[in-house]
Image 1 (tube, rainbow, N blue to C red):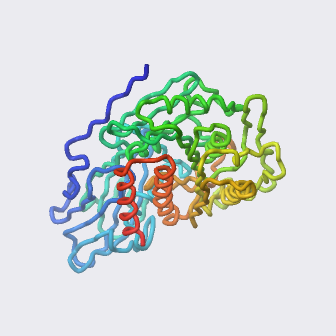
Image 2 (image 1 turned 60 degrees about the vertical axis):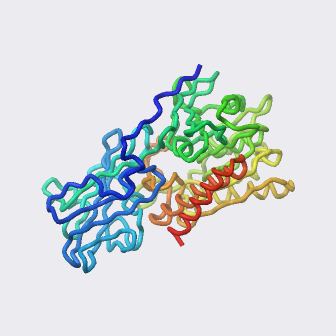
Image 3 (image 1 turned 135 degrees about the vertical axis):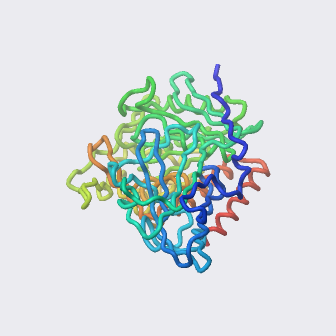
Length: 469
């Protein structure tokens, strides 16, 4: 029998103290810094303000946090106070640091390994039960990252804490061991039933729960599904059998809080071609979202009953290069599925609507090419259900939920070298906001939802458009 782990309980000020000054400590009693709200869900924007400065004073804002491995992440931004001695990040432009120009969420979105850390470290949220705790500090003058982080650096004028939660109040986290299936189910607060999805990532392996937790916080039941390097699953990628994924869908549809008769699937990178396989061969998959992936099996094949759909040929290493930072760039190695007919997944027989999310600056996969090939395949078979490609200029491979730290390159065990994922700063971070809304809107539309959920989605859309147009 499945047992729910503890339902997350929040301190009284969570989501209620929306407009109060956060827990600020100031070296100067005149300077105050605030993040509003002081505690929120991770996909929510915030307002950052500094007051009590001298007119036209130059200051450096420094955001920092540590992950569960104690890796230190920071970002900086240079601002000049107005004539009233105030800095309002919502309306003012950064003059330097981790980003320039108008970028209200830049301090959070551009968090990256501190100068003392290995620069090709990717932030993974492993513990979704606890929030990210960020510290925002204000320093006099425009300082470099090295100056801010130096042991002998000057004392901050003021600082404050900010919490970003992955699980909203009442969301349940339920470890899953169902037959061969291994994962975690996240259920929204309330009675339900809720639209349900299977959620998968790529060759990082293990179990990544942060997207599922955030989906459940927005009203979608999500099964974060492991498929290798977790629990008693194979330690490395091995030939898949569709039966494993059928069992995962069976588990989801049997749950009393999941609305049937169909569910969705989300897959990033390797998880994307697995999502396409599920859509092609599992009739109860009725909505499929892929994020920067191939349209045929990659790395290992997938077996459906007596037939094996083999993976595409291995890399052509003559087309792979190192960039000026020593990171592997794979984008130019385009493995054309049209030359490997036996690998083609029959997605045209699917019951699912399709949404292909791609970053135009993906340096790992030429993802837009593969998404367009998939749409061409559907179109050539007169596919009657909805399908579309959403391409985001300047976005890279790792399209995460909003305000996740942008990682343009990280160490990858396949090559035992850093791999370039791509994405250009502000463009990538704004694309994550847009893709998150687009994905949720798509899932709610094609999985069915009640009027209250539709109203919530509409409200989110209005707020989004006000923020970015």
